[in-house]
Length: 141
Image (cartoon, rainbow, N blue to C red; front, side, top):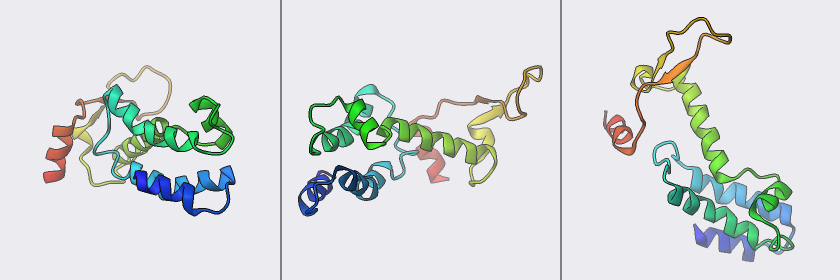
């Protein structure tokens, strides 16, 4: 992955920050996000390692070195990888709830029995804590 970062910064003739940020989005981010639902980092140190990829890349872009990480992301219009990972997890939960993937809903959630609240009929509670052993056992089935 570091090779990809290095390649993007040195193979492009242009030093246009937006072009390089787009190249990162196209060539590196898919590698970081691939199957992130399965290997989901949950420890703070793992999330920091995960985020370090984008932090290192944005720091090397021309004119952005002196900015803080969040300011660099705001300037580039990019979400943090942690936020992106959360979005992917929520999208997958949506797919489970509406049965768009072949995963048993009751293995992960149950519908709330409380009916006197406002909102929709899809209020769910987390049935189990999703951990790596649980995910690997689901993949074996």
